[in-house]
Amino acid sequence: MDRPVSRLLRTKFLLLWFTIVALLFLGHTYWKNTHWYYLKKLRPVTENHDAPFYKGCKNVHEEATLHPRMNATFMVLTRNSELDGVISSMKNIEQRFNRHFNYPYTFLNDEPFTEHFKQTVSKYTNSKVEFGVIAPELWDYPPTVDREWVKEVMEEQTSVVYASMPSYHKMCHFFSGTFFQHPLIQKYEWYWRLEPDVTFSCDISYDPFYYMQKHNKVYGFVIAIRELAETVPNLFRYTLAHKKKYNLNTTDMWEFFLDMSYSDTVEKLKEEQKGKSVYVLPEPPLEELDGQQYNMCHFWSNFEIARVDFFQSQAYMDYINTLEEAGGFWAERWGDAPVHSLAAGLLLSKSQVHYFRDLGYQHSTIQHCGQEYGCNCDCPYDVPEIETKDGSCTKEWARIMGGFLD
Image (cartoon, rainbow, N blue to C red; front, side):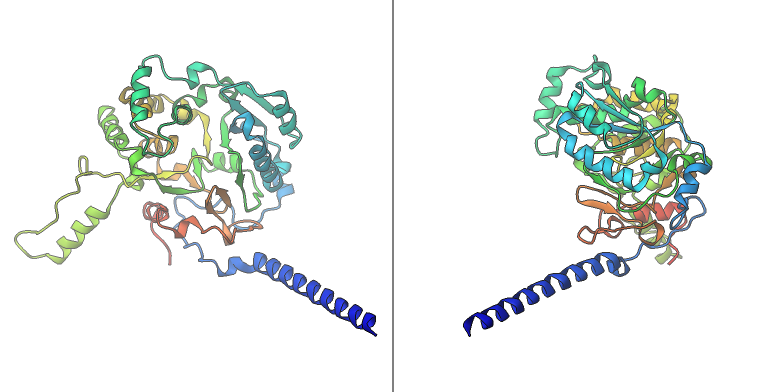
């Protein structure tokens, strides 16, 4: 009698266990497929000067045959030790985009790639793959820099993230001022920077390079956030000095980088005190230079799609030469993201800069997802949307574009 009862209990237990597992799986699948309905929605922004190239999904097969391929490449700066992260990014971007469009990859390293690295990454794409070594004159300290001085100033920057690492300074300097001089990059008109261990959470059913050119765009980004102030204490000062020296006209992109809180407060107080003989106004902030203060906004350059010739232009090189003379790539921890961004503010109009708001992109713990703007988006439910977080510069972007629509 015990055996039938035991078998019955065991059967009931297994059925209960399978039921629980099935319910958990179905619940997870349902949440994964529907949770974006409950996400804090992206606020609509005026689209007169910039708009998503498409909202939703285009016919990717038609797009892939309709338009000619642009003279463009993925640019990947990486080390042999980052192979797993490279594979992860390649598998993702191939699935989401490049299996349809077959753009080539250009891998760069300050050391030779191993045969194992080259053979392995080549297995994950049908596109052309090239590997280049960065020459010392493009990667190492410029000859005008005193290496003993560099060693001393970096030792003083231990409290600033990554600032005590010579390799990090060299990487930022390379992306700021020399990457476009590499022979493998010089032959292209466009590049798409791709990092190891990044995830694209929406399908990209059109050719970004083609539509950038069609709409006269020069620089494209997907995340705009604030820089750590301690990494760039004097970058804005030298940028303003350069603007004055070269008598550069103020573009309609420049305001994106300005802290308007003081001027907004002043205008509000003036309105409140209208009719009085004397205004009572606060003192301007100490960080203000010539009536302007950097708000630390920048385009997060680990993703960027841009024209190579923008960085090869004399106007950009003049700016880089100013920064080189200032020594901030070594004495401070100037990143390529604020350098590229401020250069865009100096030299481009807002209609020449594109926000890929319909894309989904995650790097480390920061992500943006296109939600209803994108195509087949699988927005992460465990990582907050950057647009809704403190430190995002979406409000500043909306301000120069004409404002939010809600």
